Length: 289
View 1 (cartoon, rainbow, N blue to C red):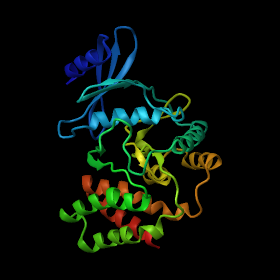
View 2 (spheres, helix red, strand yellow):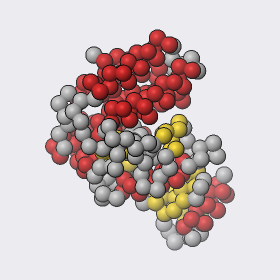
View 3 (cartoon, one colour):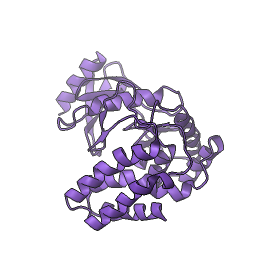
View 4 (tube, rainbow, N blue to C red):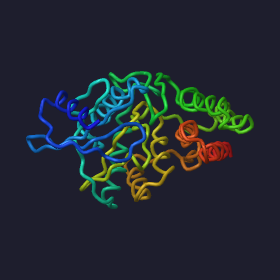
């Protein structure tokens, strides 16, 4: 695999790799740190053949998130159908200052907007991915119906069909879709979302946080923030406070955390089963209170 990475980096960058080191971790792809003959270091990753369009979707997502000049994302050097090469970002310890900066930058990113709820990034495929799960991007005028149809129902059906969720558990989540117009809170314009903003996709650098592995689309800004809370994030209180200073959240946002966490929890239920099914039902019940 290292030789494939070497060849892909040479093809994409036009520069000669002299050292290729495979990195650990990552659910969806093999990843490599590649040192080039000119002294630069790049990051390369490949997606499996079972995930068509994943690399194109990620490249389009990174470009779209970079466009407003708010959040830090790795620069894309280029890609093929199977390989993506970006700038390599060194790792540092998270700091309160970097967290506050991230909060302000996220607010600016979300405010940059999207053409519609559910819209894919320009040039990105409608059939995209979130982790190992397929994710359909279909533009819609209203967030509640878009979220229910494309971010809850496909994963709910799959989880019930496979027995990961019981029919009774599935009915609790279906009730959220039925009542979502009343649960969604005040209407907001489409935000430009990272789309898979769990803590593992926040890469802490020397003086700021970098966002990696996006599943970008137009959505509700509270979804990104709920994902950050779902699996824990260093200095989350600083991130949220700084975000609120730039772009205050609508009243009742804390009551809607479960609603917005339902999407990633159902994705994890489909992919990994286990305790995620119970967490998804708990999130649904929280949303319905």
